[in-house]
Amino acid sequence: MPGQQLMQARDMASFDRRNADWYIDKLVQALVFIGGISAIIFIVGIFVFITKEGLGFILDRFDFMEFFTSPYWYPAEEDDPEYGILALIAGTASVTGLAMLVAIPFSLGAAIYVAEFASGKTREALKVLVELLAAIPSVVWGFIGLSIMNPLIIEVFDVPVGLNVLNAGIILGLMAAPIMTSIAEDALKAVPDRYREAAEAMGATRWQVIYKTVLPAAKNGLLGAVLLGVGRGFGETMAVLMATGHSINIPHSIFDSVRALTATIAAELGETAVGSDHYQVLFTIGIFLFLITFVINLTADLVVRGVRKG
Amino acid sequence: MFEISQLNIRNQRVQRLYKTLFLLMTMLLILPVLLILGTLVVKGSSVISIDFLFTSPTDGMTAGGLFPALLGTVWLVAVALLISVPLGIAAAIYLSEYAGENWFTRIINLAIINLAGVPSIVHALFGVGAFVLFFGFGTSILAASLTLAIMTLPVVIVATRESLQAVPHAFREACWNMGATRWQTIRRVVLPNAISGILTGVILEVSRTSGETAPIMFTGAVFFTPFLPQGIFDQTMAMSLHLFVVSTQVPGVPEDLPYGVALVLIAMVLIMNSLSIAFRTWLRGKKKW
Image (cartoon, rainbow over all chains, first blue to last red; front, side):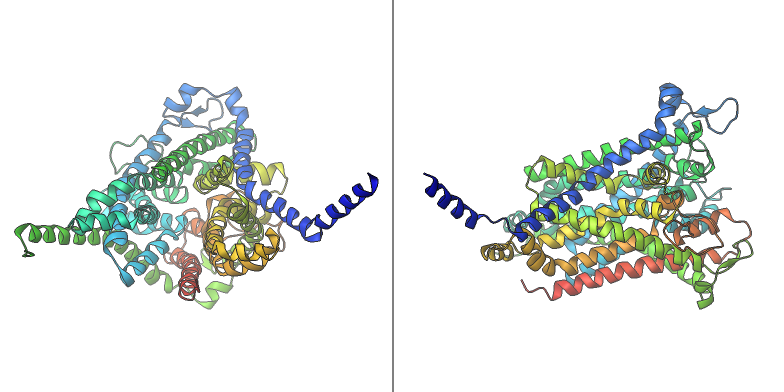
């Protein structure tokens, strides 16, 4: 019946919440959603744009064997340029490896001390200190390598050049350690207190609690911290540019100068013409770096999530 | 029955040994850095003066001050913040107030982690490819700041999300029960209670942004320019790049000059950072719930 339908419609209208506030609410929801997906857009954008710039080289000149197995990097040669990044990979790997050798034991040790042994004011002070150390810009670290570590290494080890794997490794280790410490400390804090209480109730000492209960429970989180540290060291640019000596070398000892992948891009991009082979090969290295760090971060994330589910 | 046994004594000893060992490791991590910073302060402070801060470099950058670099960094950071703060807060509101626990949210989180983990030089390449060339901004403050903003976006997102999530859920429920929409609840209840935490994140962002070098090298910062920046399409000098330049690229720089530049840069970064930490500690002290 028409009358009844009209009544229903009117009732519906009075329950219709679509006033100005409703529309504003929807609008805001759309806006923050854009913010939410911006991170995805940017990460895809990064990949698309560096691929776009590097694609010409990959399609025309890219030779998988030469690129990854040749130690000869002469991209600026006029008639016969060579694009082997093996020496650069060796440089990055040696410096990152040494850095992790320095950073992993010390940052895990520091994290255990801060999270499990220290208490009250000491702990707060240490946490603040670690956070401040993590804030020192990488170019300052590079400068420290250049002007403080360099003469120190020359004097202590009696070598001709102090800008080498050792220098950059120590600098990078000191850089990565605070970040690894705070992530590892978070991982230890994430272990529920009832685990500790249960172990203590059984008469375990503090160290036994840590060694037998907390560390096994935090294992994945700690591994995640180490992986993120590796990712950091791998992608570090300014500090390795300034402290490695920047000479192309497959290192035979820690006193050899090397050159890193990241540093090569930083040092050479400014001298290349847009669209040239040299320019494009630098972007190709960028793609390589992007993919490697992507895999490291993904692995770290999966490893850390594994523990939350369990 | 509760006598101290040999085993107890041994355990206590082991315990003390490990505690000392880990304390030692912590100290070995921190002390060298403090020593290094001390050296920077000692060598750098002789260079720093009011003149050093407020004059331009002279004699092919071997003398004079660093004012253009200081001003340039202020420009770069300010423009980067204008972009990253609104975007980061929006992203955090979405993640904390709207997003469900599903695969899509996980992908967003993964993207945020990766954005923070991609090497800074790759961000620089992206800045060159996207902003300098594709969007045609040229090497300018705008292109450099966009690159910086995207690189440091995770800092704002993570800090804001944390402070939003620290607001108890009961606050929101009370507001919804009064018939308020989601946005009204966020604006009137959640944001006012989280604003100081967000501010802490923003200060942290300032600190991070002002120290970055690689992302601005090819996108907007230059080794030297006699002009001060007038707008977002100008090139500029920057503190971080200036330190790189005077310590590696310019011949005949007096030994102490780079120390002065390094000291000013590090003071800038650490003061902002300490401010953020102090602010956070103060907030924690006056939290009502």
